[in-house]
Amino acid sequence: MSEELDKIRRAEASFWDAKAEHRARNGIIPETADIRRATRITPRFSGEETVDREMTAILDGRLRSRFIDCAAQTPNGRVLDVCCGPGWLALELGRRGQRVDAWDISSEAITIGNRMLEENPYRNGFGQVTYHLGDVTKADLGFEIFDAVTGWSGFHHLPNLPAFMDRIFRALKPGGIVATLDDLPRTSVDRWLERFFRMLLPSYDRTYRQKVRDSFQRITGVTREPSESFSPMEVVAGKHTDAVRDMEIIWRERFELVWSFRFNSFATNPCMSLRGPDWFRYPIAGAIVGLDRAMCNARICHGRLRIMVSRKR
Image 1: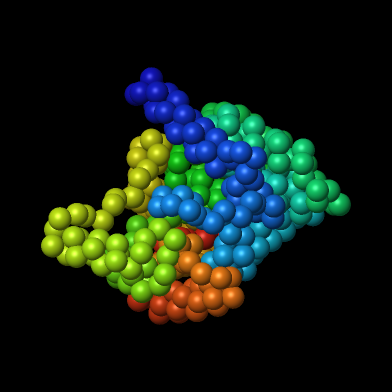
Image 2: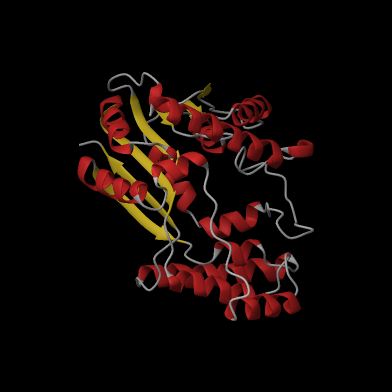
């Protein structure tokens, strides 16, 4: 089993190496590396990712800032960032004066993170960020060292999460924070609303003629809606099954839950693919996000993303 898991870890590293290299091609600064300086990308063809800091801010509301506030609650605190990728969160925590140890299995992601750290123009009050290449589940995390542990779409990559979180509990100081954002499986209502808004609104990736054709083919069974793709470790960890369940239990029972919020059931893809001038796109996106929040709060929708912040008792 250990040899098989090591093989999967290598596949995971290769998977994210390719992602990181593609997103940072031709000098592009991806949002995953620096949320403040990300290069804007307007898609020219289907399948190309949109990078739009203003749209990301609309989708996140103040949730991203609140997440960072929770993790940086201790002045000059020490933070462990799990599965950091190219390091946008570690960089932001450093900008809040935190001393961050950020771990990732992808060498390409760590290379980009270090480059962003060197180029960082926001140095006033900056703490410290140290990137570590390797598997955080094998790292010596020590005892009562960290003031906070974070994972932005990170914890669902870790196999045997309950065992790892036992080590996190020991590594946290009393009153320390553990914060996560992770994906959730969506309901049929979530999916239907996403399809509805993507059909209704002009988008970069398809004309209205193509949308009608695709909808007809799906209704008649000629084609099926593409299934979500997972990285090798997401499959092993059970991203939408075991990991979702384990995090819910651990954050509520092992720790003291401080804040939990579900959002963006259907808003992300319609907003990110929305075509038109900014004066049109941003107000429309704001309205869709507002509706999404209201339907999540009313429990009509399930939420595609979930933030949970807990404190060590």
